[in-house]
Image 1: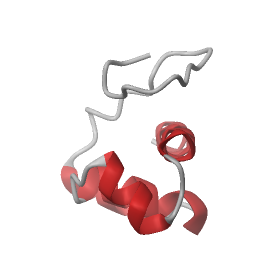
Image 2 (image 1 turned 120 degrees about the vertical axis):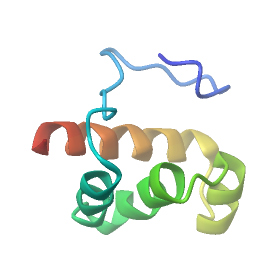
Image 3 (image 1 turned 180 degrees about the horizontal axis):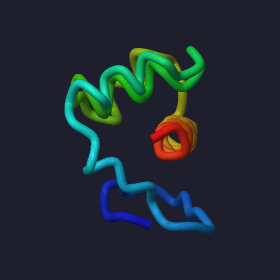
Image 4 (image 1 turned 135 degrees about the vertical axis):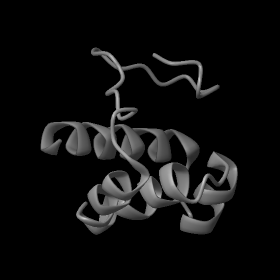
Amino acid sequence: MSNEFDLDVTFEDDEPDLSKLTPDQLKAAVEALPEAIRSVARGVLIEKRTMSDISQDLGIRQAELVTRLRRAKQFIAAQS
């Protein structure tokens, strides 16, 4: 797990690498996500907001936000 999060959330596989995507490609990929994970991905990956800010805005726990972000990154990586 990356050092990006200070939560007790672990995942079996490596973090998807989205660094090869251009900003425009990343934005298009985020906008193509299902709404349940799009708002999290948009906030973190595009708008560069804090996890705390996004979780409060969406009314979800940070652990749920991390899970949704992980799903979004996996979806984007699979589509790229």
